[in-house]
Image 1 (cartoon, helix red, strand yellow):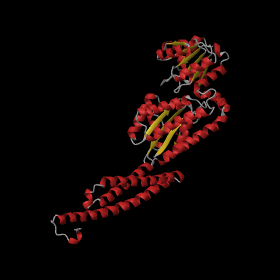
Image 2 (spheres, helix red, strand yellow):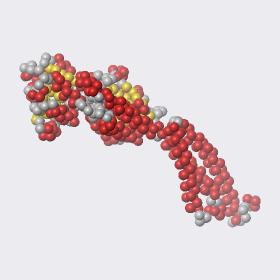
Image 3 (tube, one colour):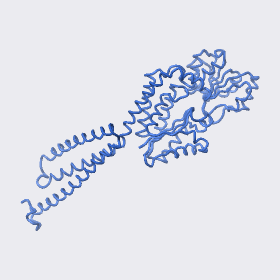
Image 4 (cartoon, one colour):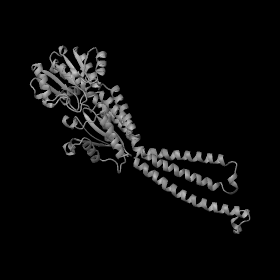
Length: 458
């Protein structure tokens, strides 16, 4: 078996490419079902956030999924030309996949170093894959390893100190660009996890005039009640932007909420009063051309990066500690993964030992011994002895895999099985001979054959 991962993120691809490859919840489920149907023996998980799109796959080492197949799947699913983004993709295999996932889940590959929101996104992606029944033994263990590692990183280091989310950095940017942010009128579009984080950070820096607007008024109103702010209906969105100073958007939409013409109408009603718009959605809620309108200051998620870089400098000392933890957990997972293919070989070896045991018992219990009262006890004792000896063999195999290599351990099992096959063949031949003699003996006792008396025991 092998593990592969293909993807792109905020480091390798610009926002206009990432948003074209973005998968919403419904698309993730459809993609996983399609992949599993095409490759039923493989395991799949798809992670799609505002900063990355990645497919993880565990499959056969020979005849399994390859880089080109996964790349073509991304392009075909979104009806895009692969050549337009092929060079922006990265591809990892085996240990590099494990290290990458553990780094991502721990927030060390995020635009905002140490952000904790990514872990909930990874967990949600895993949950969706489980629902689609596209995971398996390897991906299940891999992602639980990622969850454990993330918790360990955030518990044992100070990587989470400071602004640790895209929402926090967005508010930090607004604070830098808007002199009197505490007195500003702010509209937050979206009432998901990101929307509530935005409200939390805005309140933290002293903003009080905050209105949350969501397609589901009930959900937006729930946040408003919890946080002591205002909520408005979706139909009031344009009106509220006309009267606001800052707009921060984080709602999931397939198309732009505001194109240039629609935003120009709002600006005309504002009499061109300046407005700061921070669009942290992927795909974006505001057409990039909106930035060309006079007095509209539009920032996308990629333009938050310079604030995030200041965050990075403040916690560089913790990065090495985090990477040490990730390295240890990667090695631990790979020790398990490298021996996973030995399981079927060990199973075959156990079966061969069992066949030899049974053949020897049958060879012993012939003639008058067939009805021996001690048969059941003797069979139990022999099986127990063989199992104990087999345990010693398996322990040596596992030790070889750990100290030398899984390949060397596999060769050791193959050698043992070759010898066992020879023993089994020899035993079978002897058993057949004894069986023939036993039959002859029984016939002679019954006086129904003319067999040579030398074959008979009586």
